[in-house]
Length: 323
Image (cartoon, rainbow, N blue to C red; front, side, top):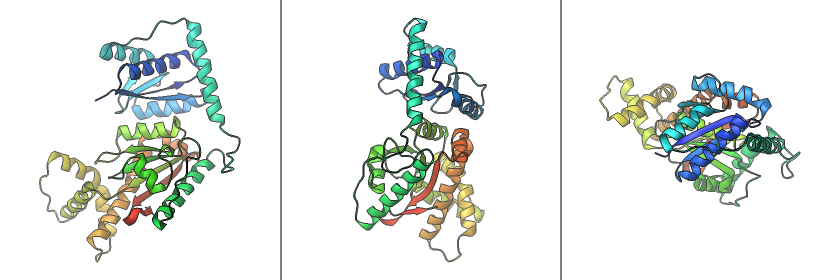
């Protein structure tokens, strides 16, 4: 598996400039490698870094580096040591003035991004309002698709929404068709069959912070894992559990609490299809809550009204059902 690292730090510092340069060297040297770069303005770094360090269970360092799987690497020294040991990669020696210049340029760029347009010409919205506006436009797009009046629109400007998918929803192209928008308006984060994990959290944070997506969508769809969870929950309720293959047992262990809660409130005369829909709704809600519980960064953004959260399920004909 290609190495995946997340690099965050105070963008005005030389140490962050070095860590970012090392990540870029890694990506250029190993074509399949991927690194997420999360430069923070000095005023934002303390809160962001402290929240992420708490989530990783490590003391705060600047910069802060962790793997896509959520394993802490450490600061600049530890990142340099890991790249040297694992990949035989080393930073090019440069005078301090060169790193200072890079840090100044990075700071200026981040300030420009943070300022954004004074008012978006198409929306008249700034800040947190852009998240709600983007979500409304995506809702309208799905309504057009369902009505057969699709008229795909370009992105409003950059990435509009981070979309975390549960089940076979598809990538950016498929979701773009579902929401009647250009694929580059969406940053898609697919979950495994067991739902939200550390890689999901890291990628969702990247969408919200580095890509400045102001909307976070959690989108579910029927899947084999869902069917397994429903049958497993029914068997568990009757004390009729049976041994399962390890992969299926892991899926059932993760989904069973949500499935059991859903079955407890399902009408006695509900059809099998209706029961699966009730379980899927609860699984989307549970996964959304888990994502925010695992990410102090996303939770703080939402609490500060800087992130618009939408939970939905793909139904018949591609119609979204909002949970």
